Length: 327
Image 1 (cartoon, rainbow, N blue to C red):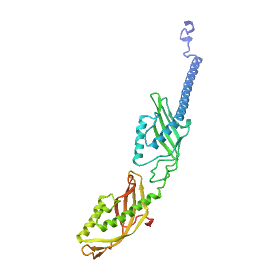
Image 2 (image 1 turned 120 degrees about the vertical axis):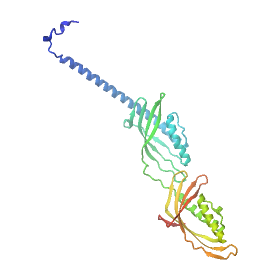
Image 3 (image 1 turned 90 degrees about the vertical axis):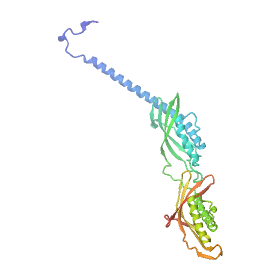
Image 4 (image 1 turned 90 degrees about the horizontal axis):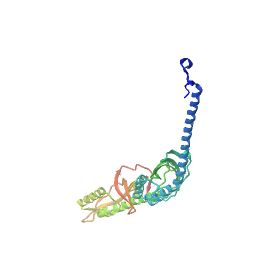
C-alpha cells in the first residue's frame, strides 16, 4: 500500500472525508434497498398469480364435491379437503338427516381476481369466492323447493404434504338471507285437521269413558285429566250423551318451528252439546251446560307416521290472535 497518499500529519488533514466517496456509497445503498423492494414486490406478485390460478383450479372441484355431499348427506369429498374440514362438515349433513332436510340444487363458482385474495403465503391462501346456488336446502314436508341464492364464501386453503387442500369455508354474504319462504298451505291444514280429529276422538272417548279412543294425543297429563272426568261421572252413575257441534280456530295463531321434531302451536275452540243420563235408568239426570273452551294446542310432527300429535294444551280465556275461522 502506498502510504504517501495518506495525510502525513494533522496539518495535512482537515478532519473531513471526501464527500464524493460517501455520496457514491449512499447511492449504492439506495439501489440495494430498491432492488430488495422490487424483489419483494415481484415475489408477492408471483404469489398472487399463483393463488389466483390455484383458487380458480380448485373452486369448481371443491364446490362440485360440496354439492354432491349435500345431496347425498355425506362427507364424501375427494382429497381436496383437509381432515379438519371433513370433521367440521360431518355434523352439518348429520343434522340434515335428523331434520329431514334435503338439497337438490347445483352450485356454480365464479373465477376470482387479485381483489379476491385476502392472504397468500407459500403454504396458505385465503380468498373470497362467489357462487351461484340454483336452490337451497329445505324440508320438503314444510316447503316447496326454494329459489336459489348468490353467496360469497371465504375459503382457506392450506398446503399439506405438498398438496393444496381446502381447510375452512366461511359464509360472507347470502342474497337470500332476508327471504322467508312460506310454509305450504297443506301443512297448516294438517294441523287444523289434527285438532278436528282430536275433537271427534274426545266425543267418542267421553261418551264411552274410555281414553283409548284418542288417536292424536301424546300427553300423559292430557289423558289423566280426561280419565278424571270419567271417574267423576262414575261416582254419580252418569254417562254423557252428546255430540260435536263445531270448531273455530285462529289462523293467525298458527306458528311452526323448524326443529327436530317439527313443532307447531294453534289456538282453537270446540263446541259440544249434550246431557247426562243415569246409567241405571237411562233417564235424564242433568243438562250439560258447559261453555266452549279455548285452548292453545302444542303439536309435534312424527315423520315416521307422517302425522301431527298433540303434546300439550293450555286453557285460554279467549283467542289471543285474530283470523278466526270455522272448520
